[in-house]
Length: 435
Image (cartoon, rainbow, N blue to C red):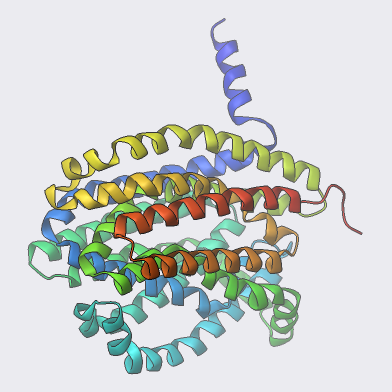
């Protein structure tokens, strides 16, 4: 008899229009969760092997890779789950590969020529001898994303989850091993490349059969048609993605400009810890929501809105308590967990928890714009966020705020922006099917 109430409770919690999303999310979250647990478990070791300056170098390295990687495919990779026929999707993949080959050569020349001046500007001269790792990281990240979206198209969440775990584990081992050998900051950089793109071979083995079977449909004429049909991704999503990544990495870049590598490293650790729920559940939910919402398509707006509301309510219930704990106790927890040198990171984390809560909820809501050709609107939101961030750090520099006051202002401004962005995404879904 007791099983019936439990069954009803589970059905109420995980049933309904968002049930498929949460089943996909559960698989992705399990893999992403294990990956993050491995990564988080390694941080107390890494913070004792590497200095805050080394983490500052890693922060700038990761920021540059994150900014450049989306350019390689002109974001056509995001359109791969949308076509109903695999033949069109494989042409989008072929187009993305062709673009990657073209842009990689030009990017290599640009980095070779500009890396010393660029890295010196951000107070990370230690990264100059390793500039070529930036290119390796960019290509590996783009290739992994390409194969991940094919996996999403086939709704094979298990292989995505397993590669997340594999990458995190091997990347952490590389960082620790090279740190023990006193290879600073190279150990962090090489390990980060593995953690971001090391799962490419696993994904290729998993989907090589289906990719080869569909490759016969690749032709220049279909590629041109697919490129034109989804041109909004190239026209709007490339600058939008650049602005999105820039806004997420801007605090680290601006702290490198305004302060020094040590403070940048402190902030990098704070962001790494605070963004755990965003990267664990927010991004995995966003991927699962996009995969399932793509099946509904823009012709079922009411069902899509109901699914989004379910996802937002459940994510809010999951995120509130961890955010409050971090806001209240962050300054005391960080020195205990990561070592006495990381007290400032805990202070940063307490303030960042405010806006991370809203960013956590916004992650799946942003995918609504992909479904209703809203790339222009998403570009506007990302441009707006970038302007707010630049204005905030510009004001901090003009007034002469401390690093802590600067991050507090940044967090409050972004919290308001993400809250309004969620409302806009919900209202962007039409009430009826557009003719």
